[in-house]
Image 1 (cartoon, helix red, strand yellow):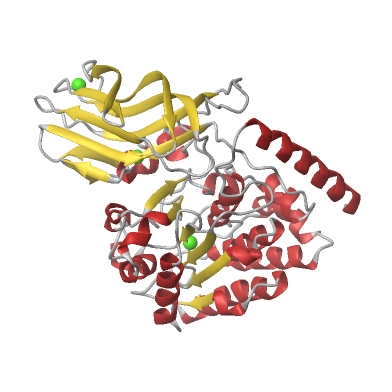
Image 2 (cartoon, protein in one colour; image 1 turned 90 degrees about the horizontal axis):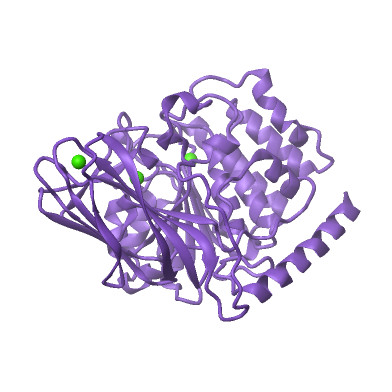
Length: 457
Ligand SMILES: [Ca+2]
Ligand SMILES: [Ca+2]
Ligand SMILES: [Ca+2]
């Protein structure tokens, strides 16, 4: 395994060098250095045990990438209205056990049930130390309340340097049955300037059992490499996964994404990283970046709608507050993207039966492509693509919708599909094929999904 590791490292370095000659990295991780700092918040004290497995795996991921010193905050047991002391203890065993084994400073870790004020204060301090050159990436593996409290205490001018990473509408504050567990949602912080990075639901990659019942023996089978590892730290991860009683460490997929730009954290990739010690090169730039409409910075005459509609990405969309003109705007500031590139831009909207809304895409206040009408009246979510749009990091993307008759101009997301790089360094462009525009299982038909995600987070 050790020789394997050396070869892999050499390959990774060569890969890294060739990639960095081609185009500048936006990172945050360029294969060697992580630009910025990392914060992590998890629940695990009520409602879902999966953090007992995910928290230690996330800590192992950061350690394997050599960025332990970039972790400045880790809070856990963060559900405040309800808690189970037994769960708190089990999660603590997972978190502090991994911290000790992988060599983290204990002072970064906050049990929200024991030292909530300390956790909030530490989030505030981490945000206040942020700058353009030293951003904070805050992985949200639990509900919004504790992050919200920390953000409220922080310097408003510093919030623009904070990137919240989420994969879960539940964590974001949108739930049909667990409203008693949360009082804030992501729309309480996005308009304050917090940047939102939404990746696809990681349950599809890192959970092999159903929420609500213990794992069956075949659910464990893909994880046996943990059980059979030579590395006692990996065997510890296996024990913590067993404690969950379900084979699920889905929240740790966000840690994998943060280090790689790869939204598809699969079990085989974790095995390579954690057990074979092969560190992958970052996916930079990403082939496609989906910006959920509900995560745009500014919503004008638009409200958020969450009806648990599985045809909608993350089951959340926007709806005109009144059937007049609405606009959504945000700056394009997402990790692992090119400084400047050509994209085919998808705008996903609902073509209702009772009207023909007019939709337009703007970049930095200038319209791109022609306006189009939601006039097929198919009652279907529909994707309109504007081809070959040059977009640079920091550009403002705006979608303008003129409501019509009974049609509410509902918007799901804007997705940028990379077609070629616009770079002064090489002058050449590399073709990319766009990823599946509906990679989110929640946005697929009910029948294509193997593992139901209802209520999972
Ligand atoms: Ca969680
Ligand atoms: Ca229509
Ligand atoms: Ca959406």
